[in-house]
Image (cartoon, rainbow, N blue to C red; front, side, top):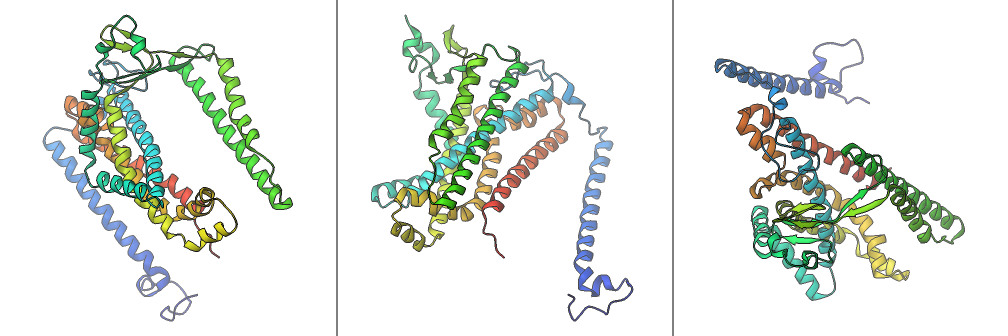
Length: 413
C-alpha cells in the first residue's frame, strides 16, 4: 500500500528516487554507502602512498618466519623455533581459553549474587550488595594486580614442597598450589587413537561427541515425559534414565580408552607433569569473573524485579516451593530482560582479556600485538590482524547469544 504522496503507478522516472517513498530510503542508503566507500578508499590510498614514499609495503610474509621467543603456557605444541603464525595461534587459543572460563564463572557469580541480593535474609542481601558495589566500581586492572599479588606472595614456592615426601605437602597428594600456579592431574588415554598430539585430540573429540549426544538424548527423554504428562496428567520419572544416558556411555568409553591420570611431581626446583594453570591465567580469569559478575548480578536483579509479583503469588498459591518458583516461573521470564545486556558483558570479558599482558599471560595481544610486532616492525599488519580477530570473535559471540535471545523472546501475533 502506497502513501498519498506517491505518484500514480506508471513507468519508472529518475525523480521517483526522491519523491516516491518506495525508493527514497534505498536512495539515501546508496548515497551513504558510496560516501563511506569513497572515504575508506581515500584513507587506504593515502596509507599506501605514505608507505611507498618510505619504501615500505604491507606484507604478511613475516608470519612464516621463526618467532624466536618462548611462551610460558600453551594449549598446543610450541617452541621458540615455531613460526610467528603459530605463536599468534597460541595467543588466540590462550585468549579464547581465558574468555570462555571467565564467561562461565562470571555468569555463575552473577546469577547467584543477583538472586541472593533479593533474598529475604537481610545479612545475605547486604553482603551481595556490598560485593556488587565494591567489585564493579574498582577497575578490573586493579583486581588483576591484587589477585596476582596475593598468589605470588601468599602461596608457597615449589622449593617449599621439598622434604622426605613432597607429595605429603600437596593437596590430597594430587594437586599443588604454588606461587607459580596450580598443578593438577592430567587425564590421559593409554589405549586411544595414539600417543601423539593428533591422537589425543581425536580421543577428546570422541568424548565431546559423546557429551553432545548425551545432551540431545536427555532432552529427547525430557520432551517425551512432558508430552506424556500433558496427555495423561502423570509425568514419568526421568532422573535415573538421564543419569544413565550421561554416565554409562562416558564410563564405558573411559574404560575402553584406558583413562589414567598423570600426577604432578616435584623435580628439581619446580613441578613436572600434570596440568599447570599458571598464576597469570588464574589472576586474569578470576579478576574478570568477579568484576563482570558484579555487572551480571545487577542485570539478573533487574530481570527478576521486572517479572510481575503476581506471578510469584500465583505459583505460591498452587503450592510450588520457593526454589521451584524461582527456577520454573521467575527466571525463565526474567531471561528476556537479562540476555540482551549479557551480550555486552561477554564482549567486555573478551576485550578486557587483553589486559592479561600486564601479568605476563601470553594472549594474542601479548604475542601478535606485542612481541611479534616489536621484533618484526610490522605494526600495521599486526594491528590489522589483531583488530580482525577481536571483531570476528565479538560478532560470533553476539550472533550466538542473539540466536538464544530470539528463541526465548515473546512470540507476538
